[in-house]
Image (tube, rainbow, N blue to C red; front, side, top):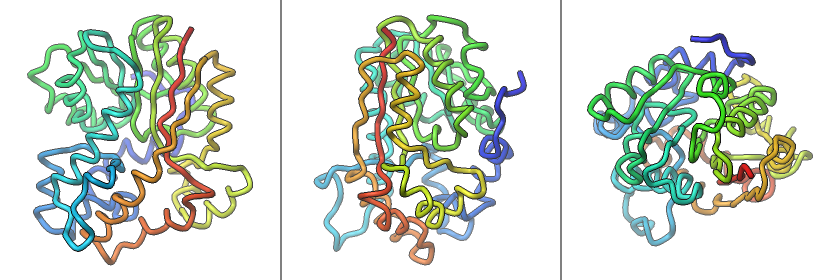
Amino acid sequence: MKTPIFPNRAEQFYSRGDYFLGRNPIFNPFLLLEHPTALRKLYKKHPLLNYGMSYPNDLPSEEKSMKPDDRFSSQVRLLLNTVHKLGNVNGGHLLEVGSGTGCGAYLVDNTYHPASLNGVDYSPVQVARAKKLNRKKNNIHFHELSAADIARQFGPEQFDGIYSVEMVQHLDQKTLQRFFEGAFTALKSEKKLSFCSFFSQNAEGQAELRKVFPTVDLGLDFMHNIEDIKQMLEQTGFKDIQTNSIGEYVWDQLIRWCNQIAPEQTWSNAYLKVFPGLLDYYIVTGTKE
């Protein structure tokens, strides 16, 4: 594997596998070892890791508990909404950046039936899991690779769509810029990049976000400003840049689930302190013309 151009602490941390194996409860609230066995079995069966999004009618009433299927459905919705923004990619060639356990690639393949789907992840633990989960799918391939290196790995004009789910917040600004540049190079003309994550809404709120989220000072999360993201995409050459706010469909169901399965862990309530106003969740798209 090539050495990443801009390695950063987040990539190094996640590549150790601690996050995904539940050894660090601060950063992996869904897979804490002290949680009920049923929860761990759920994520063993459905290893899809994202915040999820749900519309009000998707969930049971407040007096009823969310079921594991409710949670998993919300995560599938976020993934497929992000991929849907790519346009018609049926039968095309796709790239997932930050492919994790490979469950996302599995679902995208079953939904869009691409001719090929490549997934890249910096974590060798995750790449191994992804390969195992998709071992019967000959059109899906996984690579241990930094997001900064996709252009050098695949070359120009290879993909009909590139997508990423909750990966960009772990990249420092230089690595993020290289990711955008690599995606622009690797995309075919008239094709799109689509990604989702949480972003700050104004530069003035950065100090407050650092107080609320200790992962920022640890170098594991970067609260990139959404306007800076748009500017970076424009400078890279992307056109028709869209930033779709979906925070109202993300935070409530995420906090409700976390409080249900681990009421002693209050980390998710931090989002209520900063949304709306300082932080929001977006699906962002840009077109290579």
